[in-house]
Length: 376
Image 1 (cartoon, helix red, strand yellow):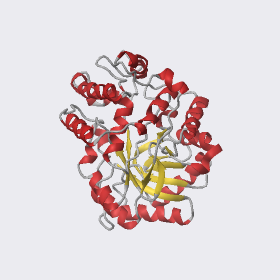
Image 2: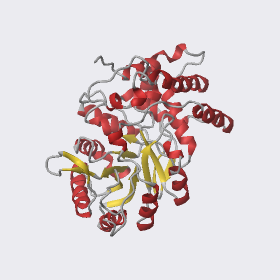
Image 3: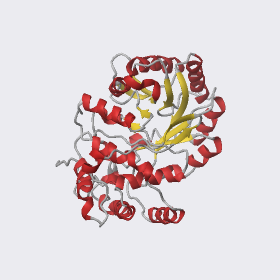
Image 4: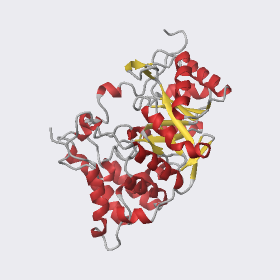
């Protein structure tokens, strides 16, 4: 199957931006000399972080299945810190284990100035890193996982520990109890859930106050609008969107001719299938038009839109390219008037995205409700 380096589209847009309007957009060349500093701070529960974080998932293997340069990943992590980023997001499952090692190495010089977030919950062998079927949030296993995380991250505490996916075999109250024990030991400071069912979130928060929820959310997939964001607002929980750029889609990195490498998750996401992609590109056209209108880039429009939805939303765009980091971090400086935001929201709502965000086998782990004690 033919493949295409999907990063080329984004670089090409950045480089060609000056031809789109009399007042040129931010180019990659400009970003090398004028670095954006992340503006503002936001709260995830009681945890204060930069308004934009950095996701490091692909720093051990990119979507295109290549292995990035480890020193370059360290440089990106450290550049993000120099530009004001204080939230760095990893997971045991990324690698598995290897991304936590990369992050721990990268943040070592400034560990005490930033917040590290990572996630447990998949069934991963702690010695070999082998990914086994299903999930595992048994309390004893969670505690074992956290000890391994601390070693890989070269730290004595995790600032924000998420349950990556709900375990249908373990009551969420038991999970909360394990995390509370870890908090008493000083190994965990805050906790959160990812892609959980709404009732499970409410029960988890009642057992041990939740600081943040992490789920996919972007212009491309707006599922959290149906209940999750409202519940977070009710309970005072922050929200961290993963894939805020729609795996490169909203940054202009994908076009109708794009085909993906074997192993790239986008190859099996039907929203990017050949029969759906041309229709869905209407959203990219909308974002590019707004980029011209606001004299910025598509990525910054997509991220600024997220920031404008709620004051407690903190997106975590990931990247393995310095130019993209520079582009992403400038989004906090993009502002919408109320009229502009209303207009943009209406335009987004008018575009019905075709295809699913993930394969059915992966989606089966989202929206799961934890069992009650004694129900199994």
